[in-house]
Image (tube, one colour):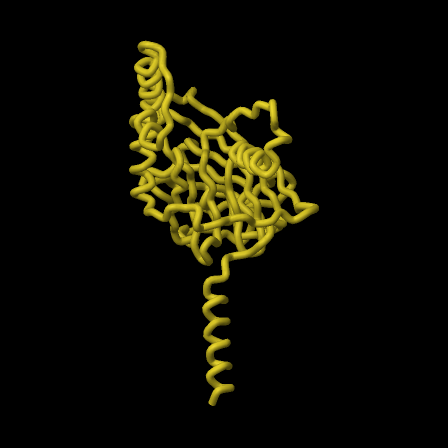
Length: 273
């Protein structure tokens, strides 16, 4: 009876430990994309572009801007070895995209994360939220034979080109689920376009690092509310976080006016719903 009880106890402990085991993986591939987007829907000249990176493992992937990742790596190295950065100035990353998207975290889901002031926010969505229609049309992109597919997502209709020559069901941003890597995808008005510029197998796998305890879990709606509150008055949001500035007379008002004018032009988010 004692042996049975001990065996049952060990089994329960093992099952509990297994249930709490975090997702582990390493990134084996890197796909680099160029995103081109129109900031102001009323101004066809308001077009910008930026490099984005998709790191892919067997179970998970991570999507972010190249500059966002570079900035975070510099910050991490500075914390590990402060003396190595003494006297060196490292500017903030020049990116319009501060988020990270983790597909497969947790399993069957995706996690969208972004730091707003001091709060690291996270919301979770279903990974398989795309209804694709695969069409017979083909063409060549970067030496790969690609096939056309269409879908609708968050208020926009998209055209994608994927290749079965890279049998990875991945793509930029939240897009996934086609029988091959998405090399190009854009909405039908061409407000947002992702184009692959490079794909490679990493010589040295990159460890997957993600600590869910660092993030405040919220909903997409509440995340958007927090972002809107920050954009409405960033100085007030920073002040609530204990971050203050010394302004010259009229300087704050001038900066807020310029900020509001910029916000009026940023009227074309990738997700409309």
